[in-house]
Length: 249
Picture 1 (cartoon, one colour):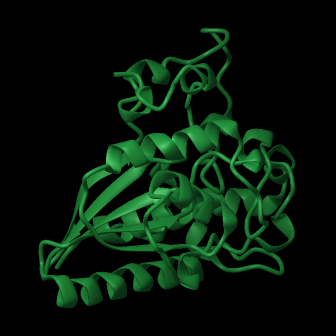
Picture 2: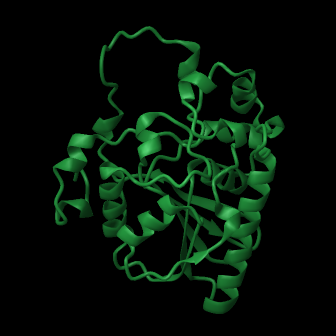
Picture 3: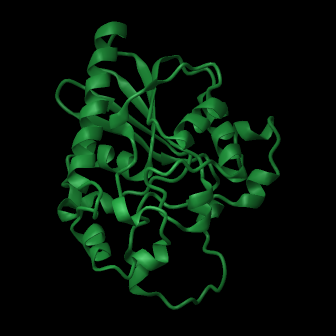
């Protein structure tokens, strides 16, 4: 079988504002554009047999900046989860909804009002990746590399499947904007080669603000929709095209 590189789109205006975009046609913000270019520099020289994308504009924009010469094929099954009535609303407000705890602790039972159940999202995304992988392997051989650009929760579900863990565990996985996750599919089992690789220095993990901030139950919650990540705006603003190849060294 082949190896897939899963690229999450760059940070969007919705990520920056703390709202849940879902299927809304939001665009990358200035940091997200630089993240996409940085991802492209990291992908330079990688011989991709195919590029596949979610139909949403934020993924198309990410690929246009990261891989301007690519001709991506659209697969509707890689679209973000349909959050229904939750779309466009503040994550802080949604955290007060009783469904929030289900999404956090028992996502396999979560179905969004006027939207999509999380298990349905997982099933379609996993099927898409595995079908593309088999097709590309048949056409280009077992050593082929290909790329799929999608969304945080979608990629988390694909990773959970590759790790062989229940969907209820997928909230323990973090997929940041413009991160690269690599899965090698073999005849017997997948191998997760890289996970949430942003190329940023580990100093970005140092908490900002008050060091002794009181911890709360919300600290254990996953970022529904994938969140805005930990990228430092100042770090990306200071980059030029030369620097984006290896952000933070």
